[in-house]
Length: 83
Image (cartoon, rainbow, N blue to C red; front, top):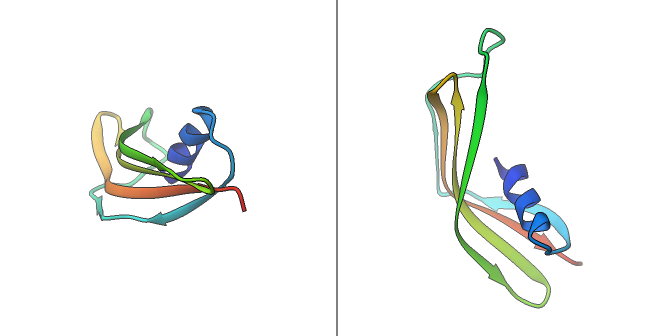
């Protein structure tokens, strides 16, 4: 989920090296197993902050496996830094 958040910041046109800064809450209720057929990743941005040297995205996310929510993340923070 952190990689998708950083990728989205780059896709929006911001440049820099990505860093996972932290997370508010993580809830793990299942596992990714070989017998699962479909994984879906959802990332919902709550805000993006930009300064001269740093761009930071704050987002919530979840992972669904065959329609069942197995991971939930609140307030994950990802930054892109040009230095």
